[in-house]
Amino acid sequence: MKLPTFSAVAALALVSAAPLARAETAADFIAGFQGEARQSDPSFKGFSASRGQAFFTAKHGNEWSCSSCHTDNPLQSGKHAKTGKSIAALAPAANPERFSSAAKVEKWFKRNCNDVLGRACTAQEKGDVLTWLAGLKK
Amino acid sequence: MTNGMTAVAVAIVAVAASWPIDSKAEREHFNVDNTTYRSECGSCHIAYPPQLLPADAWQRLMSQLDKHFGSDASIDTKTAREIETYLEANAARRVAGGKPTLRISETRWFLREHNEVPARVWKSPAVKSASNCAACHTKAEQGDFSERTLRVPK
Picture 1 (spheres, each protein chain N blue to C red):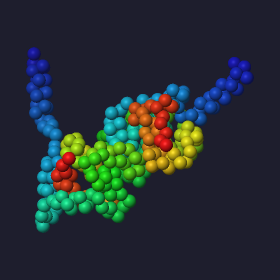
Picture 2 (picture 1 turned 120 degrees about the vertical axis):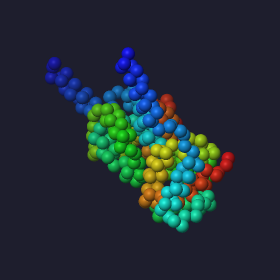
Picture 3 (picture 1 turned 90 degrees about the vertical axis):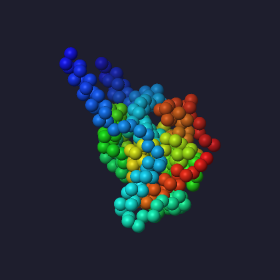
């Protein structure tokens, strides 16, 4: 019975080597952006919800702002500016699925910052916006 | 086979070849059954039936997702590969004719199916764009484009 024992041990090793699957929260991402912001800017002074809101609702040289699709009130559902498709609410208080997966957060900031600003967002910008979104209450 | 029969057969094949899809039922109900495709490509628009574009169009479209009809729709390589495989395997079996396009709404098939739709419907705020299938095809999300589920907004 050597082989099954070996397989069991190998399987166990694989399971324990896998990263702990844990749903992330907005607070985790804010902490991550804070670390990044500190590294890239020694004069970093923290995030601001009001600055985040202003950033979210303003245009940045391109046709769309964040609120073109997500509306000025991310507690409610939005609508894609081009296709008209309904977009679920972005604020975690209204939609707990938001900001719970690192892959999704990375994917959407990359795409949407490119659309709205024509470049990647800075950690400061992402942290400000998320601080505002995470603070919104129903 | 007599000459007459051959002529009829040729005519039928010619008519069929001008359609990207085989039967009426197939033109109205599409199987869009890949979870990755549905979730990734169904966020900004409905997950369009792969049967509506030929494989080479899907390939071109997938190779330029960072510039996707004016939007950055890039996804990671592994996901992109899975979606492309699915799209190609389920793509239109016949080319619809007309000039090659990446827009389903520009295919000859689409234009013919919608030739009775008046301009004011396309311009209505509830529709906005030909990419907004679900504005009229209430079950478009489920791949159902039958007349029964069609509700054109006033």
